[in-house]
Amino acid sequence: MKVLIIGSGGREHALAWKITQSSKLDKLYCAPGNAGMARHADCVDIEPDDIGTLCNFARKERVDLTVVGPEKPLVMGIVNRFQSNNFKIFGPTRKAATLEGSKVFSKTLMRKYGIPTAEFRSFNELDHAKRYISSLSRLPVIKADGLAGGKGVIVCKTQEEALDAAENILGKKIFGEAGAKIVVEELLEGEEVSILAFTDGSTIVPLEAAQDHKAVYDGDKGPNTGGMGAYTPVPIVTDELYNTIERDILVPTVHAMNKEGRPYKGILYVGLMLTSAGPKVLEYNVRFGDPETQPLLMRFKGDILPILLNVAKGRLETVDFEWDPRSAVCVVIASRGYPGKYEKGEVIDGLDSLAESDDVVVFHAGTASRQGRIVTNGGRVLGVTALGDDIQEAQKRAYDAIGKISFKGAYYRKDIGSKAVGYARIP
Ligand code: AMP
Ligand code: GLY
Image (cartoon, rainbow, N blue to C red; front, top):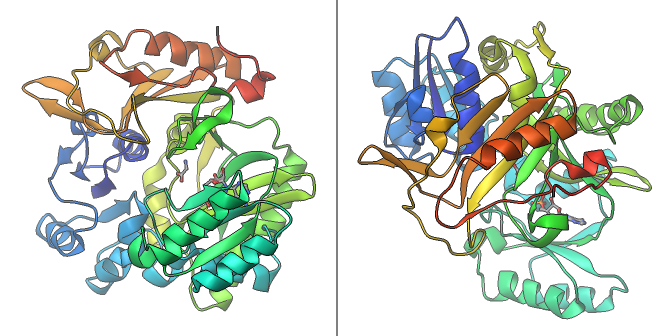
């Protein structure tokens, strides 16, 4: 099979690494890919949202399956475009991708179908939003309706901040049309977990739970990022809790999308807050999580390619894979300054000393090749991912590997996975 992966993050590198292990693979392309993906694939310089050019490329190279990493092309309708050309593609259609593309849509859906989530109201008029925010006795979370590059959710620490957020999004239109509406939502407390599931719209195949670390600094301090590290399995998610999540959230969501005439095929990512009143949905994503996919795929034993293909064909009845019982921890090395401004083009040293082993894999995100050297090319640069008999061992292996890698301005959290070992911090 010829496969095309769209995207250039750690998630896409992990997918490329896994797909390369398939006996069914003849040729792998990535658009645009990164320096790490170039080891497994031909990287072609096409941006993920350049749907027309991607479609032409798939036609020219006779690609058998396209796997979409990021949400933007999905929300723009890349799946519809490929399907109308009879090309197989893994991911939801435009109408189904609205689950991530519009928070007003997803919140309204959850309310309609009784899927547990934070209380909310939506607004398109600034005055009304401000009046409502001022009337609240508790601090809210303000969310731009559409895709805002990960910056559209403001967890407010003061009422002032909430009013400013509404003003910036609805009044000053800092996110453009993505901010034509906002959701004002109840702030939830608890631990966050990510649950991902393959689905073809009728069969649901959940993956094991993973936990992301969104905040930039240790101890979950500082602004939110795309994710600074993740681990799996998550001891706090017991079998009983997992069953509840499947019964009360995953199944009703897939069912609701069918009822709404938006059948969902692809990977469904549910971001949950485990509150004292049970698990509640914070967000849906219509794609693999990043970095969660990196530790998840380290533990995924089996051929992922037939699963991706069967989802694309709408035939997920039979799946064949197992979980490595060990734990996996992924620590993201970022460029200092991320999620704000940061430098690019810094030479990365030490990668060669980490010969790829079964237990430690360095997934690339923002990297590029320049004159034979690998340099930084983004905020999140590498995802150093390790397996271990328990979280502590996986953590130690990941941090030992990180000790061998260096570049100017390299920054990483030192406590990834520590929640699973009783909040102990790595010395
Ligand atoms: P989202 O993009 O909707 O996942 O939001 C990004 C992050 O904001 C989440 O991972 C949470 O850390 C936080 N967040 C979103 N909604 C809420 C909420 N209702 N209560 C508390 N934190 C939230
Ligand atoms: N790690 C969070 C996300 O993929 O959205």
